[in-house]
Length: 358
Length: 108
Image (cartoon, rainbow over all chains, first blue to last red; front, side):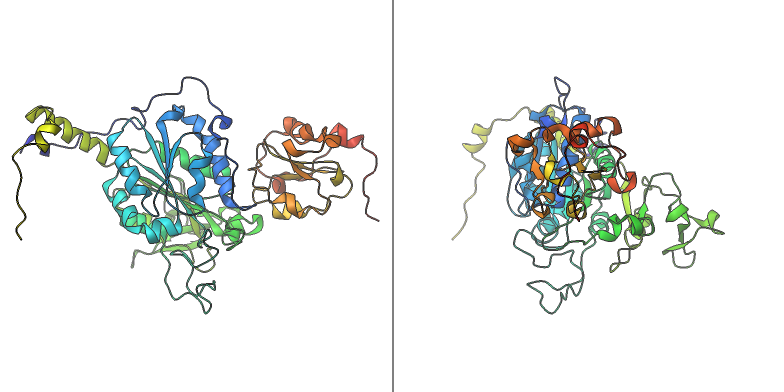
């Protein structure tokens, strides 16, 4: 075994390489001087306010925080954050952020993307960032529609959805972003809702402190082209029966007075919702740190795709595995130790060339 | 900063803004509605739906109603952040500037 194949270097404590802020910060410090231009009532405002309110709790120097976005309504986000940022190429924010995070471990790197940007145009980049476990925090604003282009069906729109581009109903089966991320080997996957500031902030906090790629799906209302898409999860009268709040180490119970619970069918392994009374000993306890993603995946499939009843929110999965940036840095250090620091000019003017025939 | 509700709302309280607000940050006082400045996300959904044009971004409040720039913030100094108007219910008192205001556009 050579040095380059030694056991993975443990990841440094998350954000430990990012310089701390020199002074106490407030949400105002993270607001830029740009006029926010989303449609009045857009869920993006709520997410922006939550992120600006949460950022000071990290205590990081603003000049060491970067928000990278692709294209779409949500991708205007970097303009409004008083940090570094890049409004980049459609779907390519994870690729650009990967380069940044791997070459600059002193940065806290965030990706802001939407369901179209992340899952259609940039689907390839998203899954490979998740697979590599690069130190990125990806906020996926899912409004189940293309908003910026005025209302075509997106990769998360429900089958049969009537839009300008599907006047007889969409023929496509939607992606479930949480299922997709779990299938792509993501080490941290969570879901939250734009208007639930407390929950959103709590999930962001956990994502920020996770070493590796964190994917946070945020259900976000597009009040112009897909209004009320998640209303059942927000309405006070319906939310208790519709939303399952996942908390690590706690029984998966929900509903008024927690009268329902989630159990596993011993024959098939599938998860089911049952009345809690009489089933207390069968109700699953949520384990976000489980090595295998099987139960997290089953939880991600629990929601009724049409009614959104039994939609889990919270952290589905949070496990530790080697972080790409740390390992790459280790490889570079090892190569330097073995072969010296290298000389680019010598390489470019050297004799290690070849001729292409023809 | 945030949006605020000025004098024209007094004794009208149409509540169209409450239906429109995506984060449930508009609270009902005895005579006027109030926007919680810490919970407001500046989305502006309330402003165009107000039938009496009482909602303003705080910097844009007309000079004649300048007292209303801070009234909404002040009424919540005691209440703090409650996490939503629907769960809190109506406020028991109005801000002094509202309470001292003559009767507004009372509905008959």
